Length: 511
Ligand code: MSP
Image (cartoon, rainbow, N blue to C red; front, side, top):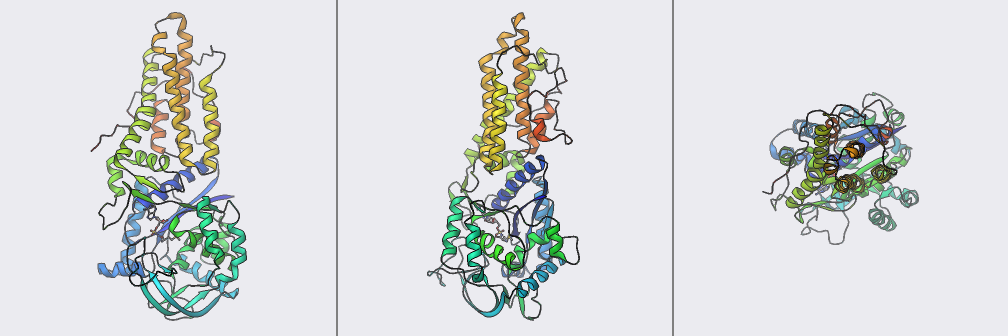
């Protein structure tokens, strides 16, 4: 059985922003974690290329939408490589294979008698690619997400009979594990309780989209098309029976990780479409919060957009990952603050984890001929071993329920406690007493061993830093041995060589 996890398929109207980097990093950490547990992971990301928004962006630049999309999709791919994102599938909704999936799916939905022609009137936000249905929606009302006026639309569209699925959707969203966190679930329960309305799935006068078979001037509504990208990503090598191929290849998704603004599409419209086509619904939709900068919404008008490329080139991958994973509780909104960023990286990564590794490996090298000391067991009780065992258990539990910030904090608290253990035992004083040598060996062995476990626990969260830590201990992660087994205490080899010291993380300066 596969574990299928997806990021949203990002609009190509711009290059990746901090919000897209955030979601993709979280998915990457979860995908890496599941792989470490031995699961067969399919990590899907990609781009959403059709629709009015993209057509207009390309027109404004004076290029063909396809040429424009080719360019930006490449930027997305390169970006994810630069961020060391371990995706398995990158889907482009302008690909031939995706078009085949959309057509095949549409035929199934039609066969369920869920498509009819109607008239769609209403206020539309091109940024959201969504009709708005609040009473205040009018020409002067600005979409709170995009800060742009809505546009009036009145056209003949094909509709999907969402209303038919009211009961099934209600049942599904009442299942606590389906939508997380609970605040998001309640929002959706509230929305669905007002009664589901059919929604239009085609557009006239938009050429940049997938043509609807049998309806000359209609293209599929971008969301109808885009959601199916998750399915086509899995069937990307097939040429016929694509839906079947996707089902055999791992569908349904185990988790869609998305921002809270696109929850309705994923937790209501999408499952109904799938039920109509006789396919299984995703197992979980996790809606994360929004990122602000220094307490303010990021936007071009405010001129405060944080460029993820700059962050990456200035600080590197690990610090940004750590901040986003550890400082933001998944599901809540988060704020990026420059000073807080510097403080957290310096405190957690440089002073606590980096310093722990430096001081212990240098003591060990100095006192034990550049080697790990023998694992002497002179004390009756090994407090650090007990603490490490509890940490591993807590960490696994927190990760399994997708509390990644708490899992990161577990690692940090093991590092803090390991530093305290060192300070309490003061091996630098004991080394001066000859009869205390076995005890010193025991202390140093314990601290090195605890650091090895810290390194391994960081593997899904901060893959770079993790390998640096374990390299410095001469104890790298072995792919052929189950990761959980390697988290057992006492595996650091006594008397093994410690490599030459190399700084693993630099302290940051305030600007
Ligand atoms: N193309 C659709 C998704 C289709 S999925 C089949 C889309 N794309 S998007 O590029 O506009 O947004 C992608 C994601 O970025 C969404 O999950 C959205 O919530 C997220 N974010 C946009 N701004 C954000 C922040 N400031 N902070 C965190 N995430 C934010 O929607």
